[in-house]
Image (cartoon, rainbow, N blue to C red; front, side, top):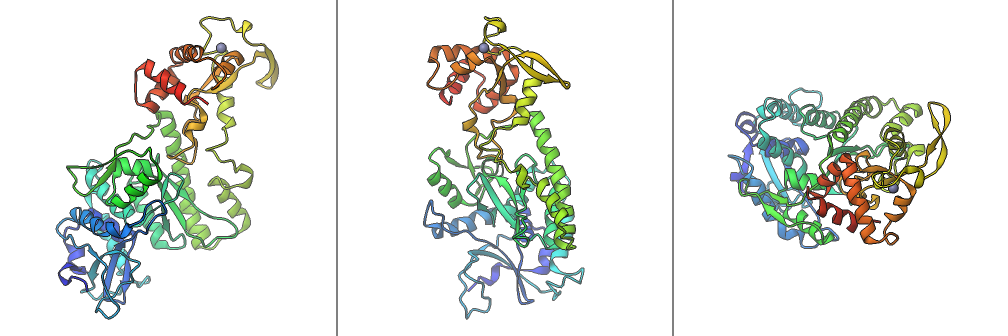
Length: 445
Ligand SMILES: [Zn+2]
């Protein structure tokens, strides 16, 4: 049986001040019981990494109620089939509204349905327009994401959306239009293939970003990550926002250039996403050429199918080769390049010319960057690439060069490449050069 005192009238929900967390949760998922009730829910199942998830449902309800303003009405779902309100046991905790206005909740033809009313209410919230209301914006996002997202095993929390539903497309547009999805850490997984055109799409958020910056009500989620990753940091509770768990870890901050690149990429995908949703999914313009173009745009084209986590990006290698001066960042202060390398033919502006041969080296070894943060290798970026002569490159390979020689080369590299020094400082979170040398050496492959 549900606690009747914790069922909110729809009239009150629409007129009164409702906490951003609750609005976010209803925006994400609203289910109807006949035409009498609406509920939203949280739900999570036991992970293979850690059992006992049922011990955490009450904690979740307590946490989310602390961020649910004047109506902390989340309750565990303990209903039974003969109760007046019965809700399937797959919904672990619920927040119930009673349709006292007697509107047609799900009537898509009517502008008066629940989704439209909800969207209209949310669109009047000042936190959507006022970026300084950071806490409210985070509450809203947490309400939206936290209640129903799952860890996808590759560094992301994934949220399904119904790609053929106009309502779902409008909801996601609302998040994007108001800057609630940080393009550095969100992306789309369209799952659009010839075979599975009806499979739900997903948008995804980097779990490290989420658990450091947004925080979760879900202690169980933190326990699973602890159990699956012994390097995971301790969880902390924000004293100022009781009920929210954070992980106390650093995630890689992107350089301004890289951030700009990500933002541009996200915006173009956003445009494509809207076109795809309306054109391909909803209007049914499902010709093969359109499908091929979308697949290509979302990096799903078969000819462009390399996994960026494990395959070096040749485009940036060429860029560094062409753009940076012909000198070895490790030994240029001590040797003439003619004593360390040799001429090879290289194409410059269409002409084959003799140029000294260099190798492009990942300052922090590539294999450490297989990403928990993005689909790409976070170390396969221009900021982490340097030009070195073949001799230095050979020496700077694990188990080949002597430790003292490698450390001398790393020292020169940091002196001669401010770009790499900046990047490594951000990556390792220290500006102490000796410490950087040790850390880069320790992860050398
Ligand atoms: Zn060299």
